[in-house]
Image 1 (cartoon, rainbow, N blue to C red):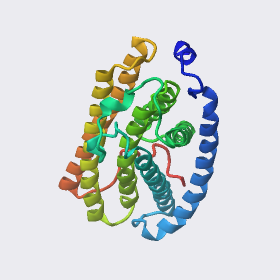
Image 2 (cartoon, rainbow, N blue to C red; image 1 turned 90 degrees about the vertical axis):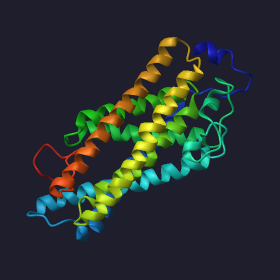
Image 3 (tube, helix red, strand yellow; image 1 turned 180 degrees about the vertical axis):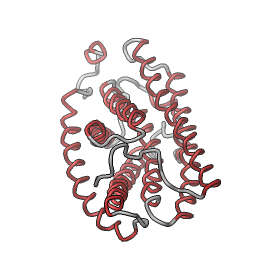
Image 4 (cartoon, rainbow, N blue to C red; image 1 turned 30 degrees about the horizontal axis):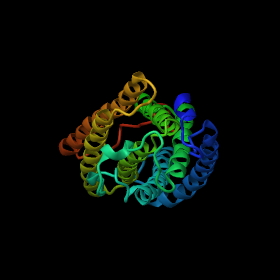
Length: 287
């Protein structure tokens, strides 16, 4: 990487580790925003919370819904920003509504000209994932703790690694692939805490289609294009590790899709829309 930086054209602004100062600031801003919005959403949601035998359970369900209401706001904003930055780029794929091909994401690499606001988009949104990793480590243990720990860790590593290796284009597309389905993921987790059972199922079916299309198919397609392009990340090991970590994410998506199918089958058999994928393992307490 030092050799690549040394051979960069004059006045070319190569990524620096000091650029992550923007990530640190955005992480703080996201954390403060989450605290404020969760409190607001908590009180807004309580009248719609499903009937609970105790106030403690109602507080837990309302807190969980409030957290996911914040996530709906965040991922909707991230998705809109991602489309604004990437939609007209020659590498933005047709399966996401673009007119390009992912094979072009490494054209001119490692000294390519990046899309307007792509740098800011990656560094700022990375702050959210850094904060999520920290909160996940110190927060209440849930049934999906290990899966989400792996997901957050790989996400932060890929954001940071892609940025430092100047592979911003593929990082932007992969981030968008994930952000789209995170909107419906959060919507389900909100509606599941209400008595609107059939609304939950309708959104869940739409979500399964969206998840399968973006994460299961879209991410697989992106990984294949990266391997086809064979970008020079300094050593063959770096590229192999990059693809390996993306493949870990892909396998996680397949695993979660299997759990979606189990939840759908549970509804068909028992009529239950209770979400047990991220249930708190400790005693009931306010989130």
